[in-house]
Image 1 (cartoon, rainbow, N blue to C red):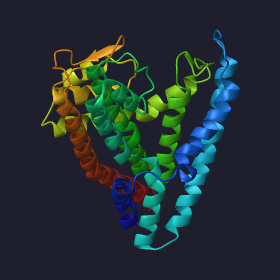
Image 2: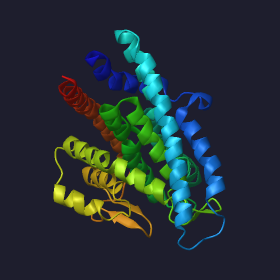
Image 3: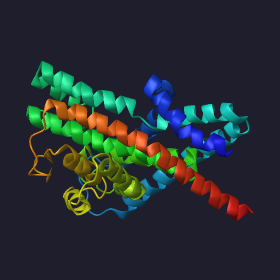
Image 4: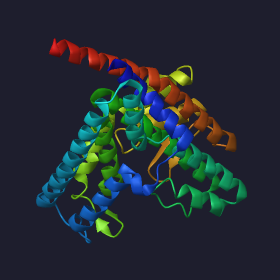
Length: 318
């Protein structure tokens, strides 16, 4: 059992790097997104509304029912796989875990922004729009590059570190729990109008749930970046991280800005490492390499957490 558990994260990352994303028809995160979209269209109003606690609790109930379904399916799949022997069980569990994380796609999409920028600013903006939800139509080349680097840092946590952290703690249901919560936040967790619907109350539960589940992983991501940069002043890191509206995304983004020595900003919202230089083409590639270093450094940490959890479980059952 121990050998099965500790080998799964590395196998899943290897499958991710070699094979990339599964087809949409077989992708569990796509299924989650479709369910969330269907319910969102029936929950969120098309006009702004004042304080609406009934809407808040209806959306919270739908979120809880959907996550219960996700957890049950993930648990049953895990139990079926664990009935098999050794390496077969580990390989199948890694294949089930893989769609719940995505480093190769994030890495390639961010580098593709830099390639597109080399062709033209409109091409860079178009490529960036695949990564971010903000309006990119008025961004300069430097701002496009900054946004791509920020997206890599933030999604490094959301798409790799956090799913593996929760897998280490709770197995496949833990990774599925996090990916559902993060997807729900991305689709519902807005403080106002988006996509013709008002999410202030319909999306508040989803946003807060993601904040809670991302709190520890976001700081782990930042600390792994700091370690890869041969140490960053933690007080400066914390001070920069608090400049963003999110309680979590600022940590990996601030760590990336400080590690690269560049300025990263979202116009009109925040500026990280304001004394840093303007991000250049090589910084996008440096950010991608730093992300890969974080992923590699994450593996032994995840194994250590898994061993700790197995030890606690063994002690409780003794």
